[in-house]
Amino acid sequence: MRNPYLSIIIPAHNEERRLPKAFLAIDDFLKGQKYAAEVIVVENGSHDATSQVTRKFAKKYKYIKLIEVSTRGKGLAVKAGMLAAKGEYRFICDADLSMPIEELPKFLPPETKGVDVAIGVREGKGANRVGEPFKRHLVGRAFNLIIKLTILPSFEDTQCGFKMFTAGAAKELFSIQKLSGIGFDIELLYLARKKKLKVKEVPITWYFDADSRMRLIQDSLKALLEIWQIRKAWWTGGYK
Ligand SMILES: Nc1nc2c(ncn2[C@@H]2O[C@H](COP(=O)(O)OP(=O)(O)O)[C@@H](O)[C@H]2O)c(=O)[nH]1
Ligand SMILES: [Mg+2]
Image 1 (tube, rainbow, N blue to C red):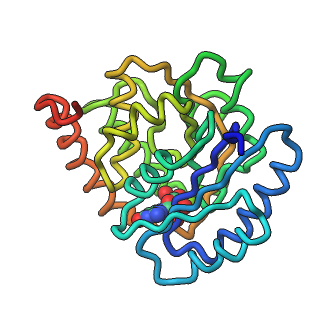
Image 2: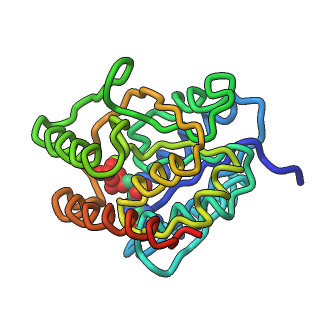
């Protein structure tokens, strides 16, 4: 079989409830596209029927695949999915589809011709955040400011769960990416900059979903530690 044009990689932890809706929305979307695609669900550490639900859908929708990783962590899951993917373009996609999948073409040529990495951003001109509580937005902005001051001065939103990589960029970045926690987004963008890859920010419409696998304060603090680990690894040749 020929390689697909697009791989959609969904990291999934306890997603038995949100995945079925996501599969149906993605199938609707793909029916309208001319290219071949695959959907790779990467599950780890779930206590619910995430894997069973995925297997059930994969029987009907042959382009759906399941990878199970033993250790927990979104970073680990995305890495495994990106390296197993066969697509020319490889898209990280949260199971909640908080960005409607209809926005995906913004991440593909011709919109992103010559771009290696295209990242969804929920800030700035053209972006829309719907329904996000003020307090949560404030924590997010404070976190972004810290990221800007400590490691990535030029990105308005590193944490959005919707990002596209060309096959080449995916191989180059994910083969050396290490972090398992939410700092993996920062790590990828840091490495992309160091490798002089072309990164484009894509403003999206994003719908807040209160159902979250993230522990806002705890995970943000952990990410700060991870920023230090990224810098140290780069200085000491850990990404060779
Ligand atoms: N495989 C895997 N996926 C995870 C893990 N933690 C979060 N995710 C997935 O990452 C995506 C974003 O999580 P979500 O709870 O929506 O986070 P939020 O939007 O940042 O509040 C979802 O698809 C989750 O299932 C994990 O440890 N392993
Ligand atoms: Mg979410």
